[in-house]
Structures are given as C-alpha cells and as structure tokens.
Length: 123
Image (spheres, rainbow, N blue to C red):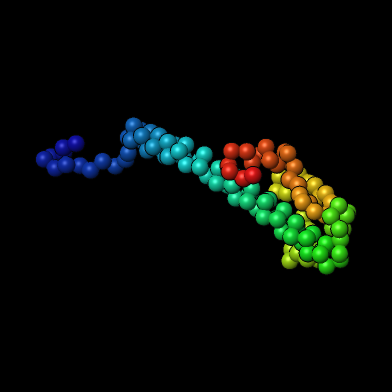
C-alpha cells in the first residue's frame, strides 16, 4: 500500500499465506511419517532378535557347563544366571518367547510378533 508517497509495511500474514505454510508442513509430515514408523519397527525387531540371541547363548553356556544333552529340558532359572540382564519371558509386543529343549532353535519368537515385524527385513 502506498500512503502519502511512502510504502506502508504489511502488519500480518494473509490467510492464503498461512494456508500454504500449513499445507507444506502437512506434506512434509506425510512424507516423513512412514519412514519414521518403519525405522521404529525395525529397531524394535532388532531388539527382540537380540534378546532371543542372548537368551539362546545363555542356554548354550548353561547346557555346556552342566553337561546337558541335546533334547534336555531347559532350566531357565539356572540359564538366567548367564545373562547380564534379567531373563525376558515376553518380547516388546507382549508375546511370550517359546523355549524348547537344548539344541537347535531353543528360543522361538511367536508368530504374532513375526507378523507384526513383516516387511521390515527382520527374520
């Protein structure tokens, strides 16, 4: 606006300018949110797998030191002494770890957790 030969500065943003800024912020959020959720799910999956590996290693150590044969029942109380942290009975999604016998596949992750982690590269 011109007032007496001088330009008068605007005092506020127009509604159109504010709407454009809000639209841009919404677009950026829509682009970032899916990748954030996927990376969060990946980190949760990695933690679940790492917890299972640590418990599996503790069972292996317990079995070797107590001369347990393949197929013997796992004593989780005794095996937990080989962990630095507490023995976890369930994962981050609330599903229980399945503990089988000494040997291969001693700790199993539930199918519910596997379905929740589908599509993020965690097996």
